[in-house]
Image (tube, rainbow, N blue to C red):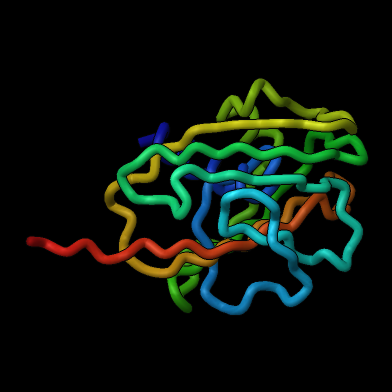
Length: 176
């Protein structure tokens, strides 16, 4: 059970930082208005693009895309960090199923990276270019519906690292 919980926390965090975070599904409402698609094969957008962010996301690829329940999700991401990310950095995550808010939670970014062994990335994370990958299991029990996620990552000083949003639809299972 603890492994599944850590795995869920990781996916939200990996997706949130794109180049290193989150396990997630997301929120049904319009994505933040100042957003742009993130290059690659994923349904993710970088949000709050009018604000200064210290992570420039080059690409995020998800396989399979769209993610499917009861499967392994392969996530790869690349980008540049333009400042040091120190212990105390955090990610605010909101997940909705349709218009129902399922989760609003703050995760410690550094703890999440360490607990989920993201290419041995640990804080402090120095400025530079990064290419990361991670596999996570999506449980078969994920209910059908449209999930919308918004994840905003911040430094210990509350500077925006990045903002990621996206939506994933898990179709209903039909019995034959």
